[in-house]
Image (tube, rainbow, N blue to C red):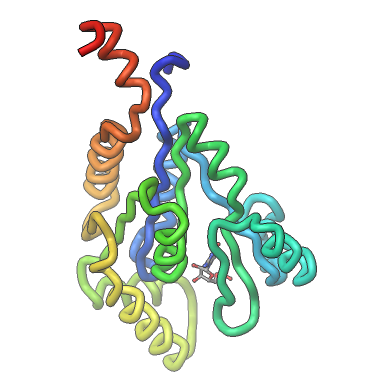
Length: 212
Ligand code: 5GP
């Protein structure tokens, strides 16, 4: 893209109950759109399993998190599940948007709501629904052996997440990953053409027809 026609990037929020296909869609989007970055959150929780610092999260101490919050370095932050803090760092998002790059957020309804307060006009919020609760349960069970209690907790959490579908601009029922990707491509194509995301247009039109 020529510098003269640099659009403003957008913040694409993908939310869904776990196992509805969000992570797969996020991975496919990032592989396909070279002008899209994944927002990497900062957290005070410890890294699990194969998680890599700087890729899955930026893992920091509670003191560092507090200092960052005090310096206003987060677009939003929250205490999640009662103990650990999670936050979205502001600087990489702002840098990406002004450079005409989109930023993808893989966050739940709570994070999405908080982002709305700090960055409403840059947001494009997409909710991914499972085709049925039976299918969601099947996909959740497919992830490994969990006790019946754990499964019931996960299903209850999924229902709670789904109850926020009405807060999103777009909703995709993920029957099939390819169709859902086609929907996401269409959403991105349209959102990138919004007039407010093409600040170069005023000069361009003046160049076409002269001053009105
Ligand atoms: P986990 O510890 O399992 O990776 O994530 C726990 C929860 O933290 C998830 O519900 C996830 O959506 C939320 N989370 C992750 N990053 C952020 C963030 O930057 N801000 C907020 N508000 N929540 C986050």
